[in-house]
Amino acid sequence: MKITPETLLRGSRGRRFLLEYARRSEALAAGTDRPERPFSVAAMLAGYDLDPGRGRSVVLVSTGDRDVEPHDATPGSVAALLGELPLAELDPETSLRTLADTVTVARYWQEPDGEDVLAALPVVRAALERVAVHVAGSAAVGWWTEPLAAGDQHAVTWNTDQEPAPMGAADRLALWSAEVRAEERSALKDRPDDPTASWSGTWWSAPPSDLTHTARSLGPHGPTGLWLVEDDMGWERAMTRRVGVPADARVYEVDGPEAWAALCREFPLEVTAQKRHDWYRTTSRVGRWVLPDWAAVATRYDAVHLTVGAYLAAAGTAIPVGDDTASVIAGWNPDQTFWFVDTVRPGPDATAWVLDDEDWVPGPGASGASRRDSVNG
Image 1 (cartoon, rainbow, N blue to C red):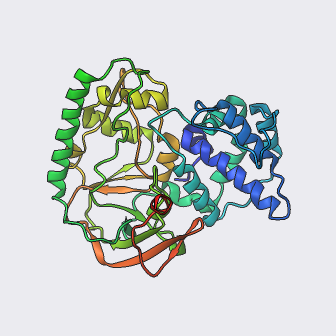
Image 2: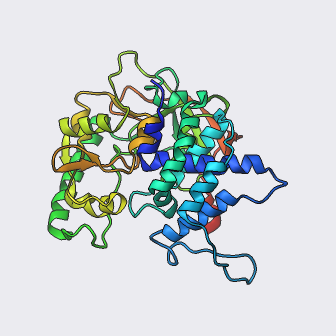
Image 3: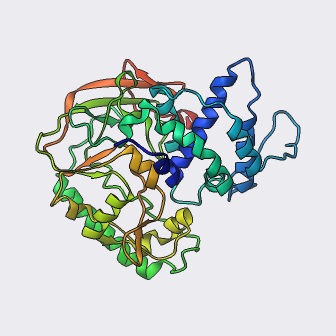
């Protein structure tokens, strides 16, 4: 099944991909000799005007001592420029880089940023339909709707130091489930009922990050787990290891919001008190919240895989589960699979990677140092 334009336009991450791809198309067409990029500039300025942190957490700066000049960029002008923009051929490299840009700016602990807001406005969304048709017709995105690539899974570690062996998967999931329930009881007593209150907590809904998690490889670009990371820590070095997958592995495919909702209905875990503030900010929804009880899911399945298509359609949105309940996919990278069994482990042979500008390339070793570490000394 191929990805559809409707899937790309459905969710905030999909629309942001289309906006970022249009920006890359303009840059590719302009080249180094033509610095003028009117669409990209207009999208940035209009997005700034719509950003909830405008003038506080997000500011415009100019070069030198000049003040920022007034501008006339509006959602309408962005849409008009987008309608005239030639779209570049979407090859595997461009699609991967654009997807990485889209994932990097995801944030589910606060309001959507200005460019996410911009892409959701009817006038801009309508202009993005042409981009969605172009992207959906590209062979480079064919794998976005594919299930787990069982014969090509890789784990990524950002630190070469040896760590103590984690507890077994079943024990880790039982501990996670107990901790979530304890946090919910505490939040019911200690946190305000008002979803607009200034409060934040554990905003993600993915399984525990210290479980084995894997992703497919994209040939010379390496595993997608190097590139597609929400809320990343600015790593510049990594190690990857191939992971063998049993032929009889029971893998649940989250291939769209409906599949996530079904998992929540079958294995519900109430998290309203602990999630309501963060998830209200990112979705504007008021009501009860649930997520899958991963300890219970593990009694039926060995792993859960999130397709890229499902991520683009649903991540960061309020997914209806029942008449009065909803859920959010948050903190789960596209094409990532979490494993609930101890028999699936990374192999002994590792490949080192280093970040060269914006590309991950094979390197001589990995120290685990990050860009943030180097800046902070």
